[in-house]
Image (cartoon, rainbow, N blue to C red; front, side, top):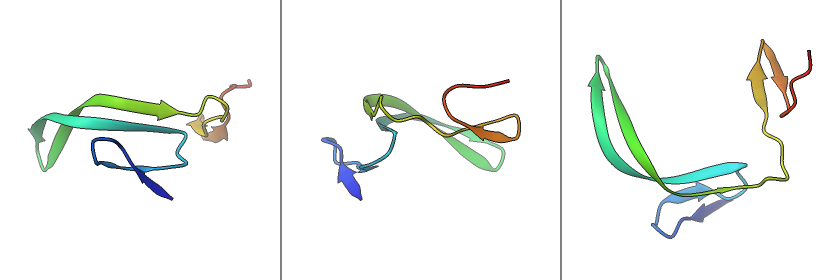
Length: 65
C-alpha cells in the first residue's frame, strides 16, 4: 500500500522507516551518478524490529554471540 508525503513524494505506507528527501546535489563517479539528499521528514514505527544482515545471518535488533 502506497501513501504520499506532504511534499507529494510517494512512500511505502507500512515501511518500518521512511524518509522524504530533497535533492541537494549529484556527483559523477565513473559510470554512476550519486545523488545527495537532505531529509525533510521521516517516520518510523518504534514498536517493530528491523531485519538486519550481519555475519552472514539475519538478526533482529539484538545481536547474540
